[in-house]
Length: 237
Image (cartoon, rainbow, N blue to C red; front, side, top):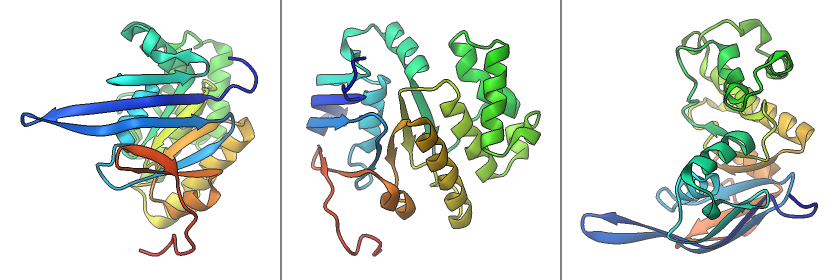
């Protein structure tokens, strides 16, 4: 990609779904740009289309119309196979449900993106261990996910998302399954690592600590994305 080019450029994006014989428009002409190194938080009510937008930005789904350009590559111009390969190389994902593979050890889970990208050599193994050290879990490398706490599992997911140095991290309610104290600790790990790597991150969250630390807040409403107003009582229930 060219210097100065946004990591994400979304133009006139629309997406509808058929439900019970009717068509529901979820996204209606969405425009969005995310610059390199930005930490962007997206707000919106349940069902507003936030996860749909993440799926389109990642190439997991395709829009009805409009374009998604990631790192200078327009995803609509790629075949499904090419989108999969592009996603493996250039995207990292962190989910509310952790999504670790239960039959793989902590180390093997972190190695997975490197395996998929043909980088599972000695250098790749060293990178995986470096990231486990960064998230404080090097001593649990041979443990299986079911032996870890929720906070530990999410820290493994963070290491897995970052180990292959993606252009963009997409996170969907990353602290949603954690208690307040654990969520705060996990958030600090997130922020330290993405700032250290100058990684670009788009987060869908209701965690107020993320809101306060974001470079930019977006709001999804009525099928569109706009800059969120800065409201003094943002922490009010």
